[in-house]
Length: 75
Image: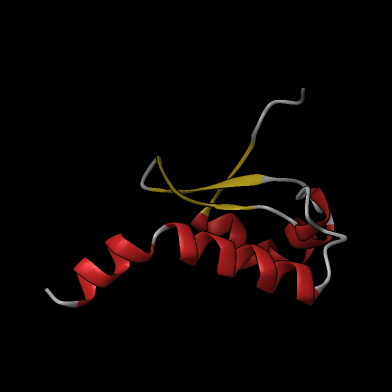
């Protein structure tokens, strides 16, 4: 497995196109701390999943969490 690539916010602002075109998972740093991650869709396991499958998986998750969601919606 490759090491995680890190870029600063300044590098991201100045070289966003190059960084995104490289399609490599990248940690984004702000003040030497990880602010977020860029993960190209091509690197995700569901990159070939169609919209219907995504909707099905989303509904399944919502169904599994329905009690918690109902509780939180009343707060």
